[in-house]
Image (cartoon, rainbow, N blue to C red):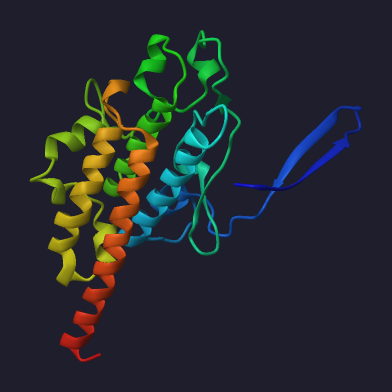
Length: 255
């Protein structure tokens, strides 16, 4: 997100207060869309497969930018649903850079998870072992987030105990039993005619990408440039296929 302006004032205790002003995001956070049941009085909101693909592509583009087009690279360090905001057109914006860190040469390795920032469930496992901050940590968080968007399950769900995680749970069902764990709300918004097409052509590749990004070892994860390219291709293919299928459905139904 780009700030609109900066304001500064002094309170009654003569303490200076500074704030960045951002454009209001009409559709709130992605968390409120995927997990509206946790918000009192929040009406049910459903994201279609197409919307989820677009949001994932938007986020990959944002991460590719801060990792590969900013000097020195910037690591967000706290990627999660509540930090992804949606504007009036449902375009996703990456927010809350409070934990972000520039990868300056000689950056001191954090002595604790508190210094890293981040959120349990999304944080890269190597940070818990005292590893240095890298862009690979954001890639891991993105992978977890992508799996959450596709399954509707939070990484901190009560189901995930001991060695079971959202990654290992999804991996155990991949690819033959994916239909059992995919968020049913997502497919409800799509034409039933294209369900099998969506699964084979888009959902399986998306889940595979989420699993690849959330691998335990940083060296096994792709870079965000490659992730962004794959998601752009998936988005382009889905848009074309969706348009063709909608035309076919209209022809069959006579509408």
